[in-house]
Length: 426
Image (cartoon, rainbow, N blue to C red; front, side, top):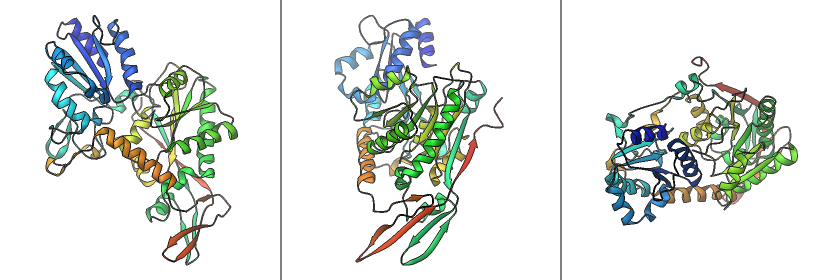
């Protein structure tokens, strides 16, 4: 849509140049390809071209001469995934939002802000966005997921929540406790979600379901693929071993530490490999339409991240089967997000008042904190172990001078399938 809009403005002689800005090199490369095709011109910023595609991270490295030259022309600036940019003033903005307010806003004749998730998990206002009273976002144009499904632009998602039917928690100093769901177990704070994500039997169950689903889809779509969003690099390696050794699947791993990640994503996009396991690389914007099955196994439990991950399997192709399946555990927050998926803009799009904003961390700082927390939860978690199935495993929980022997048993798995837009799809 953005490329067609730019072409229309060029044809009407309303603009001279386009600058597209996005949050990652993978997305920036996809934008470059799309705009180059639509405008029938190289899109690399060189003399004679009509525009360029860069990342938010690179904005601070563009020279004053570049911005001065830009301000002398009629420029359309397009911001992809604008929710990464926060703040309505230079004093409250994060690093990327500050660049937009101080540099781009002054150099632009027209601006276009795009996102599929127009809110932030920290409830800060989006840069350049307008809000109604009480912090409700005012969208100039909204293309809803329901409309996209009805017009067959997007697939109709089915979300499978994996839960435990009878969970036993035994502690040497207390009577055995029984729970009928992960929600009731996790809510008391004695078992954290990270343990579920890393447990062998939990992974074997959810991966087995996803592998079987992908196998069924590939009977009609031989090129269909699956995405697994892991919580850490060791977690990704654990998942990779399970996929390749137990389920005999073809798979690759891409992580934020892999210098060849972008080329590996590109290779996977055009291959027929079954699975791609990602840590911080394929959560938003990355366009791999053949993906139709996804396992959300990240320890990031925000609605924004959940919807970004789901979006990776919703893009339609010309293949006969257009199913889209997301598998995750019935963690309380993720269950709520799944139940609310038909709300295009949930209540979390509201932002806090500017008086309570304080100092906004930069996007780079937030990414660093996320990676640090992920590593900490992986390597410095408590000594609990989680047992799924009929066997018991002892574990200790330190309580001062004494230690408590704790055992958890989940007797069997159960599934709940949420078929979004079931009654609105035509």
